[in-house]
Image (cartoon, rainbow, N blue to C red):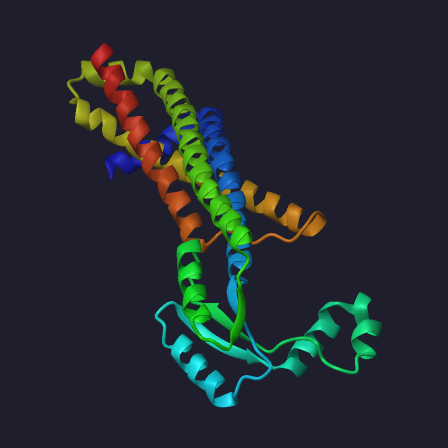
Length: 284
């Protein structure tokens, strides 16, 4: 109770310093929040593109229906395959008319449908890497009635290269932003401790132990970190709303990330404060 009461009194004694410390913490975490928001939306964009990765096996016109049924069943049984859809010649023509309206007259005046039937092989999430796609394509190619197999080899390789680059960039920049935030928070906490050096000296003169002196500061630092986290959350959400409202559509970060951000601010505030007080006590 003494620790909590002293922490609350510290806020009342120096509200300006508390607000300044919380603001520095909030701005530091705000940078991390913006990066998390950008990283999350980049990941969603790559996943939406990745969902379109599939293997298309074109069927010869003279193929019997029982052969197609067997191939479809065997391809569907592969562990990497989510499903196999048969696109008939009529379906292919209808899709072409819908997706290529600029060639509508060409497809309308046809006396013979030149488009082949095909098997579209959808892959399971997490199994759309270039190696898996090539393996499924090779499996589809073994059927003698399959005329050609396409999956956009170069496009798939570029997609996963971009994904790997995005993951590496997110890790490096995320770590850099976290380190910068840690330094800013540490500086803010050290300023707060230095401003109360006289109080610490008085407590030492009356025989207070170092652990007893540190406890109120640690609680105060945790509360300051929590306030800074809430401020960062508000700023990040305000930025998200402005971008969504006036620029383009974005997705808010997962709730687990927001909880982790608040927890990180609280824990780091307490840790940085305890470290700063311990260092100051050693110096005096």
